[in-house]
Image 1 (spheres, helix red, strand yellow):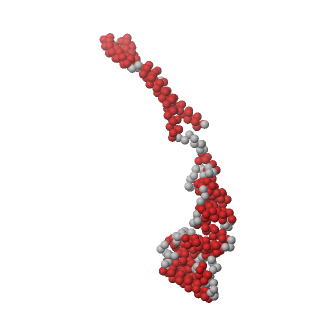
Image 2 (image 1 turned 180 degrees about the vertical axis):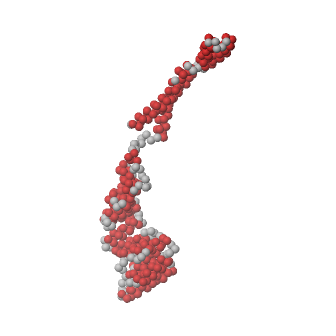
Length: 368
């Protein structure tokens, strides 16, 4: 309200500045015309004659000339009546008093923002700035969402940040709101399940497992949900089921999938006690009737064939990890280290495969 009052005073002052010179035009014209000047000159000649400064013949000649000029000036003033100037001043006054404010208001309503609320200086420091601390940015987004609770996209942006900050309960609420207002998807359900696991200290709770199952129902290839379903099976003591889930993931995944080392490590974890880490289920079934010596010989033969294949085609990162793991299980640490060196040499020219190999080796407890 104070701002509008100031604007009104400024408008009045501007109009007064325009009208003030116009209002003085008529009075100034009365005392400054050319005819008045010539009249004063005639009186001056009479005074000079009385004082004896000029002779009568010169004075008469001067009177004639000044009289001629006076008549010409009077004719010019009569030809341009003062009424024309008066009409011009009135038009200018109307323009200043009416047209100018109307034009200003029209321009402001079309270009300005009359409905924009106040923005006090105390709040201007809260404007989003990428250089502010993360907590400040989060506070600003939360303030926005308090006023706009149905902004599903805003909840979706805020949720992972809250999870990163360790505010798991708030992150769960944000993920739920994101699903409510933006619709559910396999990715959103899997993200919600993941933060539920984090809130439970890494345990796949019944609630989290339900979210992962919903995610897989929406998208059968949802990687995060399938991984955590395997983790749930492992935590329940169902290692064979966990291994089956993770093995299926690796079978379908491309060789460059960034999550392969994590799943490979999980698969090694549930199969680490096996004496046949590189054997298929059919081979394991066929080996049930063998004695320990025969079974060990068969396993070493298959490991040897795997090693020969990898010498011919060293791009198979998963194969190298299986070979290293097999030597570790068989109690041959020297061969495991040799396979490790061969694997690094084979993928040295491919940075992505080298990264996957190093990650997998770290998960096996070796230096990556």
